[in-house]
Amino acid sequence: MIRAVVWNEGLHERDNAKVREIYPDGLHEAIAAGLRDPDGGEEIAAETALLTDPEQGLPEERLAETDVLLWWGHRAHEQVDDAVAERVQKHVLAGMGLIVLHSGHFSKPFLRLMGTSGTLRWRVAGEAGERERIWPVNPGHPIARGIDDHLVIEGEEMYGEPFGVPEPDETVFISWFQGGEVFRSGLCWNRGAGKVFYFRPGHETFPTYRHAGVLRVIRNAVRWAAPRGGRHAQKVWRVPAEQAPEPVWRTAEAAL
Image 1 (spheres, rainbow, N blue to C red):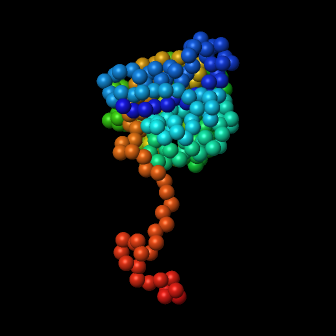
Image 2 (image 1 turned 30 degrees about the vertical axis):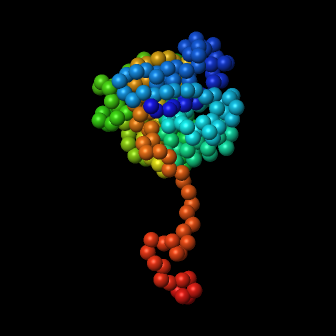
Image 3 (image 1 turned 120 degrees about the horizontal axis):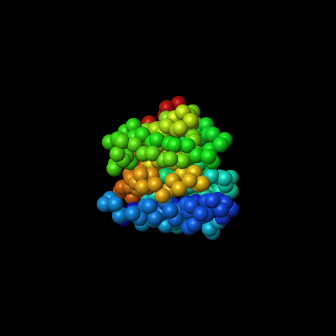
């Protein structure tokens, strides 16, 4: 069984009646419910965490027991403690999977792991919604499993290129929007012993996390990102000369 935690700011549901109407239990609960769907794949035990929880929902002990962390953030990126972001980064480097959703491209953990700006193009009138077609450009990838031809979301916020991220190790999806833009909407990276997947859809004022195809992709991504073979803590090793795999014949003094 894969142990997943869905992290959410939890602020839009509190402050926006439209978001509350779509997600009365919060975006995090809608995503977690989708992960628990018994679709024939490896079972996923999904819990949730909020920005307002103690230690922002992600204490060391919890992350140590998490196989895959899913991150949804939008308007409170700067409210995430640097210590929490560093903790998440450390666990990803040691093998925990990270799925970054929608506006999480500006989250502290994602930017730490990418080392870039995360900037992109977006439409100011995005609340109006545009049709999005999500095309699997790597249909044989495990994250695209079960997606027939492409996905259609009738109303979503537009994101467009250029996207300020490092060249991905794999591109799984590209999106086209009704206004004409395209966007690399499903990207994979390896970071240390961990795997990172960014998936674009999920603006809070649209019922995107009720879309069966979107939830299928997220489940696939969790299974792809889950660590196999345990964690591998990042260490700095100081190896004495007498413990070298081969004899060390010359000392520093002798080399002078």
